[in-house]
Length: 281
Ligand code: NAP
Image (cartoon, rainbow, N blue to C red; front, side):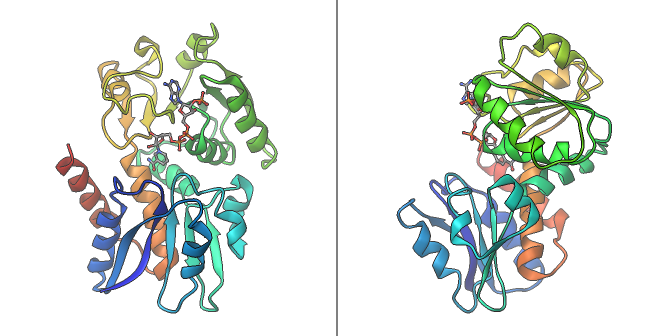
């Protein structure tokens, strides 16, 4: 086995990316090994430079380095450039490093896997951190009717909206609200898509919004990798749900294709990810 790709972040120990990426490599009979590379901010430049060596395919990048990695790369794809963050690095034949953002198309592919058509959709996004930025960018580029970002800190929601507005020619209706704003109830009631990108729910208990606002006509997506209290409530209210595992696998599948030029074996990767999550319960 050769180590040719890995995950750069801090922490990385919790990640299930090695499980489903190595399943994809084994599917093709490739000897590559996907490794966890715990990397501090101080060590980031040396870690990225190590990807230039012969035999390396590249890396994934996770918190807290998705933005800091950008100036260390030679070029960016259009999405990474627009979002200002890269979660995938590809070593090209000449040793140059190209940064991609597969979180954005990974999220949109996960919506497509649910049969959700964003064109003309009314969307509510809870949260305004790094993951929200990818979701908001993907949505405003795909013809949605409106996007409301609901976040604890209003300035963060406004900043995400200002950034995505600057990278699209489309003109969706955009609104930023705090979670306790009186308008939230009406806005959520009219939503076709509700996405939770806050970390609220990781503790298995907290809800990022009042569950009675969920209606049966919505698709409710939680970016957390397993069934959260929000998703349990959404099911009780008759809504369709998706947890964050599909987005994780979809962004990984796009990274695998960029590293290898091969078609990602999505069912193999999905099954491996699902099993890894169940084993950790
Ligand atoms: P982040 O940049 O730290 O943003 C966290 C967001 O959660 C912010 O909007 C923050 O609000 C909000 N928040 C945190 N604690 C809160 C609380 N107690 N009450 C209300 N709001 C709170 O994190 P991130 O990278 O965006 O990740 C967010 C979640 O998405 C995590 O659960 C992560 O695991 C998941 N994720 C999933 C995928 C996937 O592929 N499925 C990819 C990336 C991330 P403020 O702005 O007010 O601080």
